[in-house]
Image (cartoon, rainbow, N blue to C red; front, side, top):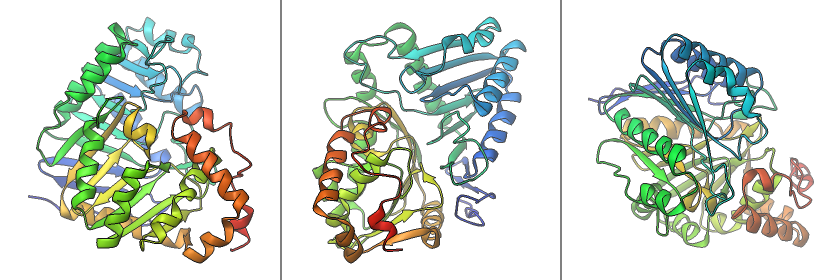
Length: 405
């Protein structure tokens, strides 16, 4: 039996109550505030008895990172098996010596794509935390102050999903798969492709979907494509949005036969990603889609609701997340849960700029559109940390947009 989800009291960067629900024998908890995510993580780590496993794209040596690492080290010292898989590119600024105390306490830390090989351009963009093989945590957030601090103009507006229930075992199996690959076969692209391609997503109402550099569609991309093809209602809150033409046409068809609403970023540490998204607005607006840009702080959420299906996890809606990076998305099939998330998205409107055909045309000068196109082209293939340095003259606050306010 499915319980009714409890919506956040204020669906914004200051939302503090979160959301809880039960779906198919699983307890789901959504945490929107960064400081509450940090406290929840520390409580889970401190309560670990047998094991603590972590996959993370960015693990900073800052206030939040030091607290998490300290808790991991303390867990290892009391006999908990602690394993971490960290992306070498996303966490490239962190010295390996930072993890020495954890290793000395008995924990292990391995780095994904440490060597220059054919797989080096593939990022392990996943965020997965497992406690005692019983509790799983995922979402868009990394281990860093920007993602795990109180809401502010400079923070990332994101969400964390805590899952307990029978399919957590599938998340444990996926961690073991990625950990063994990173420890023993790192850089072997063909093996990584096979692991992603052969992943069994199951048929439960809570599914763990993975993505990666497969020659054909990965399990996550294949599932979302099928849902878009038959869907009639779409709500998407997305940090980085720059899909290819095929996926864009699917979005347009859904908007025409039903209803599509997009919440995009108005602020980012990567202006190129905003320009890449705006290049595609005109196509969607002409097909009656609603587009809002979230302004209070930087949007880092990866949330998709299609009819009765909700996707939450690590994948952006761009070429890298759909076809290249190793990603993890939880697919939840439950009408009540989907409606609560749809209500959450609707509640963001007062904090957004509503993009109309007229306002979009007014700001889309030929020079601005050229910059958008260059941004879309580069964002589609380069890593986020690379495109962050290439803003193509696009600033966080577009003067053409500010003039309309």
